[in-house]
Amino acid sequence: MANIIKLKNSDSVITLKEIYKKSKDESQKTRLRVILGIKAGRLRKEIAESLNLNIDTITNIAKRYNEKGIEGLKENLGGRPEGNPKWDKNIFTDLFMTIDKQKGYWSIPIMIEWIKKNKKEDIPYNTVWYHLQNSSYSYKSARPHPYLGNKEKQDSFKKGGSLVR
Image (cartoon, rainbow, N blue to C red; front, side):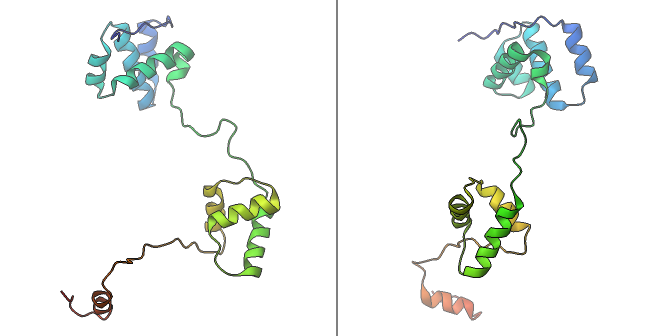
């Protein structure tokens, strides 16, 4: 296990320090500190301890820098590169109309299955939940039931009495 990392990118220390001074992104500044530490010949363990980072994080930052250069050190906000998919609002309109007609209990997994069967779309759980929250419907989830609970103690508690021991 080598402690010194070789950097492929040939950005000068001066260039890296200028980018550091101009950056407003604290995460990018931390990544730049890592690269500057490596360029100074410091060991991963030393860099990790001084910046309060994991040694694997140091390695990952160096790999990213070797692959993408300075651009690889910018903040990655994650998410889908293509953005969130736009779902046809009629899917949810039809779903809610069906719920109104059939009544009963509709969980989000049941709604997802209905959408797959009737609309041929595979919509994620969180998306269905989001549309449910932004409609006039409320969301109920299962609650744990104390099946081993003492019925006498429960009744006493409900009535506001003292606990029976």
